[in-house]
Image 1 (tube, rainbow, N blue to C red):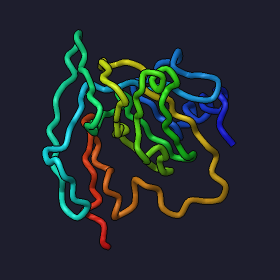
Image 2 (image 1 turned 90 degrees about the vertical axis):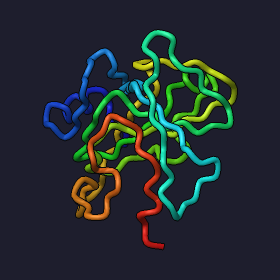
Image 3 (image 1 turned 30 degrees about the vertical axis):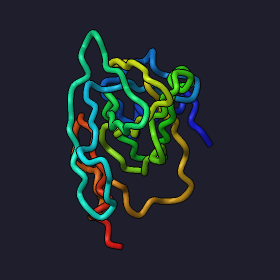
Image 4 (image 1 turned 135 degrees about the vertical axis):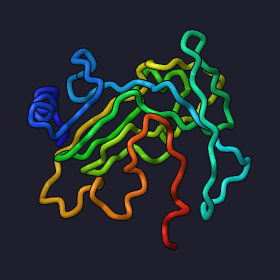
Amino acid sequence: MILSDQQILAEIEKGTIVIEPYDRSCLGTNSYDVHLGQYLSTYRDEVLDARKHNEIDTFEIPETEGFVLQPGTLYLGVTQEYTETLATVPFLEGKSSVGRLGIDIHATAGKGDVGFCNHWTLEISVSMPVRVYRHMPIGQLIYFMVQGDVNTFYNRKLNAKYNDRTNKPVESMMWKNNW
């Protein structure tokens, strides 16, 4: 079941959904709009290796002129909003207006876990060159109810790799997995 605007507001009142900064005008019928933060990152190496730490270069999106994303490059972006989701499952989807510009905001990581507390890292790719701007609407969070009790919240998992609070994109931590 997807939470309605009234249910999202009730969860915010209870403190089980936290959105900072929060703007009531960003609340839709059953979602909350999030915005592109001020930072983008790209990987340094042309070939990525799932077993090693692939380093990134991070830069600020220029305030007024924005930045032109190019096809064939994976950009890591970040939401302007910090979120905490302590009783529901958050899903991040791109806004249709963003998709109509040929922008994908995530390759596979659209679902968060109960207990995820951070800015969302975006895995951005484009089908043609497109100029983006910090603070532009980029996606929407949709919240699903959880059936049953949760044993381990993401922010309490000992092996959680994305718990350090940051407003900058975070590179893949696949290399930390045991496999």
